[in-house]
Length: 163
Figure 1 (spheres, helix red, strand yellow):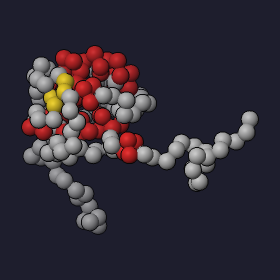
Figure 2 (figure 1 turned 120 degrees about the horizontal axis):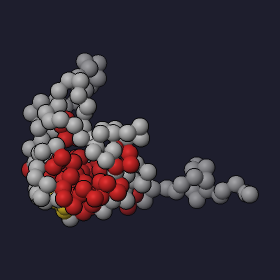
Figure 3 (figure 1 turned 180 degrees about the vertical axis):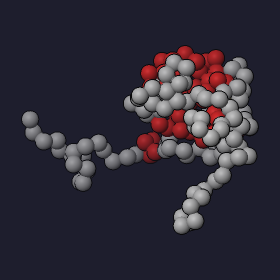
Figure 4 (figure 1 turned 90 degrees about the vertical axis):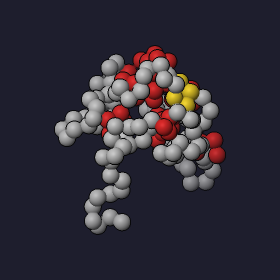
């Protein structure tokens, strides 16, 4: 079999140059204030079957983690020695959505629709008892969620040698 012919110089025949659509869901591109959240929405009730179908194989059926993925549901508030999860450690909810939408599922990133990503985010927040499982998360409601670790989270790198 012949070696692949690159579509562009320098890519060794692998992949293709990124286009604008590829970068619209860049990891953590949704800031704390929710700017850039897409239309759509979902509830924890809607997110439960999506989580079971698309997340549980890596994160466990109860969010306990597996050898393939970290624990995503843990006691709130976070305490030293407990697992760190999005619900007990993240200071803001909107970037949690951004991460799920951009990077999950691990083996098929950016395949969740905005509605599915909102629903999975709502499911995780509801499992942490941060919101009710029937509460709809969308571009308006998600940035308003008061995360349990919001006031304790320290931004930036605490090392004195890092600007």
